[in-house]
Amino acid sequence: MSSSKRRRILDIVATDATFERTEYRGREIWLGKCLHCNAHLLIGLACARCNQGKGSRHDRHYHRDARVRELVERLLQRRRDRWRDPDDA
Image (cartoon, rainbow, N blue to C red; front, side, top):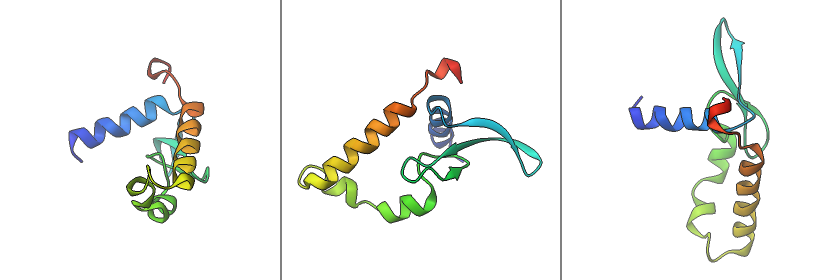
């Protein structure tokens, strides 16, 4: 894993209040929730199923499609609601 990817992962864990340290299959991990469907996930903001379903279409048409803008705004608000100060992680 590259150092920049590792840094992004650590930033997610540090700033998302859904992530908690827990034991999983005999080792301690960070467990959080998907931003879209609230499914449990190990690392990331979206589970693989939601991320795959989203694809790039939400980003590509962001400024032209009112429904996409609404969805993106809703996801950004959900992310803000889950925010925690990295010093509290």
